[in-house]
Amino acid sequence: MTSRNVRKKSDNALGKGLDALIRSNYLDEEEVKEKTDKTKLEKTQKIEDEAENKVNSVQTINFDEGVINEVLLDVHKNPRISLWSAKSAAVLRFLKKTKPEFSISNEASTLIEEAVKDRYPDIWMIFEEKGL
Image 1: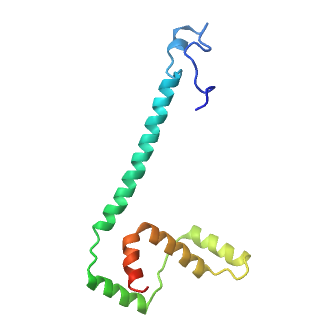
Image 2: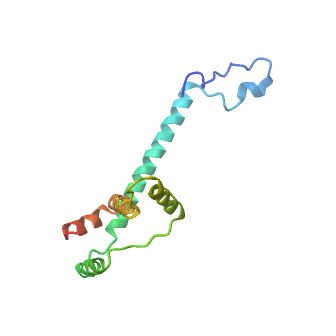
């Protein structure tokens, strides 16, 4: 926060009565610093909690070899997936009509692979090791 955003308790208080002297928006620099530090700490904690939840959700998945082999067979027979997203479809179709040689399938595949690899890295590694 800049120094001009931090008001001293005496600024603009004369002639406005007791309310102007005790209004809560007149913070001294130390109070502003404490508020900023608290906000930063809360944001850091939220990021750490989200990362921990992500790890915990992967750890609860059963990495049974039979399930992995079943998935591999299914994927070899039919590697397609279906999605419904009107906004994504609109953007990709727009690109198809305006960009020469743009491939909706290739772009969608790239985007989905990046997102899945980022969200589920442990599972991604299992299938990467299996040669997919």
